[in-house]
Image 1: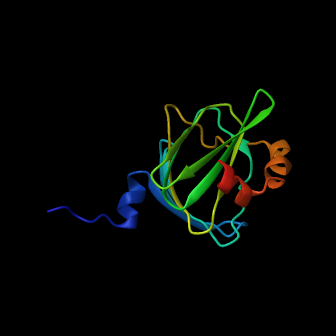
Image 2 (image 1 turned 180 degrees about the vertical axis):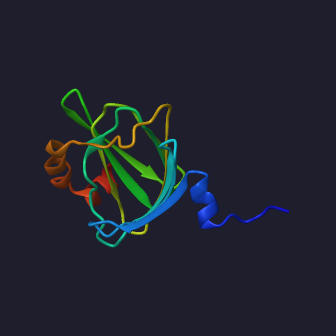
Length: 145
């Protein structure tokens, strides 16, 4: 029979949790590991909106959409590429590519961050992409993509 580990036992093994309500209202439930990998469940709020644009140099980021819809914006060679994900779809973020995402109300996404020799932090802000994303009409894109 499996033994349930206490929070202290998990911490001794390099596992921690961090749960937050983000500035945009999203709920994030994180399970983090000493090697830099993590699992995050994100639940969209009514007015979640766009996240903050960023890129990763070492961390691989896989997002799986459980319910609802999610827009992903990538900046490639100076051009914006958009994708619409629906329940059951997934997105593997390429390294060194500025990106942002928009969760529609009711969406639930699961993100796995993984890789080898991960740094303590691998989130590089790309603020030049934020006004471009925020100028988009997500509801219109939901109809056309």
